[in-house]
Image (cartoon, rainbow, N blue to C red; front, top):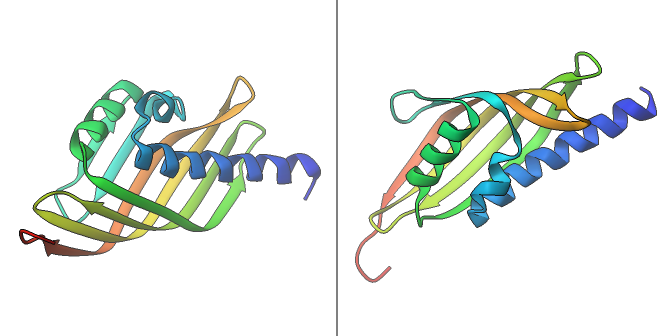
Length: 143
């Protein structure tokens, strides 16, 4: 594995770390810059499939869905493969915590992604999130 390969893999790991951090901090403009303009994102489970097409649609819909919820997103055990000098794929184990006023969601699953190197920077081009298990916890007054 050459130095460029290791460098590219590390840059993709940093891209995904920013994805989680910027989402949790609700820095939507910066979060949107992590995606190609034509990104396609699909989310499975526990709800019916949700699909976003294009960066603007994705940022608008996700920021609205999360709103003022407290969120914590973790990605683990990346499996990244460079498929050319400008394309790559990756799979990440994931955990997310989303706490709204009335309920709390804890999700467990995987991200499967395609990446594209655009003007020297890696971006997410396709994202598939599959939650294998979800815990819903109602929030009672005072907790």
